[in-house]
Image 1 (spheres, rainbow, N blue to C red):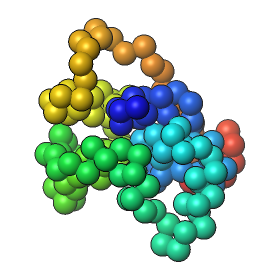
Image 2: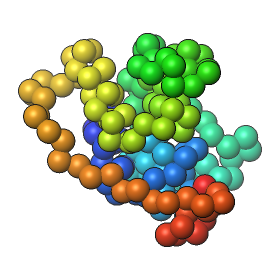
Image 3: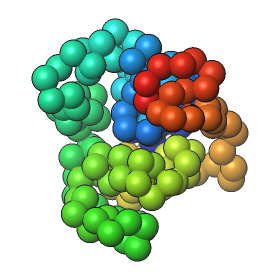
Length: 148
């Protein structure tokens, strides 16, 4: 599975949150949802119990292509957008800081993948996915209630 496909499918399968994944695995950001999709909800417990929390190796083990250096597509989106250089880190920044939807991120990642020859088939005219949007209030997922 390509990174863009996992982001797109993760957006359909899991609610939206910021900063990786909720403790119960019901919601995730662009990167977190992709990892929930391929690693399963058990991965979330590893994330929440690992000292220091997030580990980029989890992403790069599943999607080695996410290590490539890319130009940030929204350099004005946040004051520190230019400090993000790897595809994985830019994806995280686009969702968590710049506010891009996971579907828009998946579309952009697919263009990067196509540029690097990771797709053989033609691009479809329109995406048929629908992102799940879960409201977050006071750091809690309104539908599922865990901390975000």
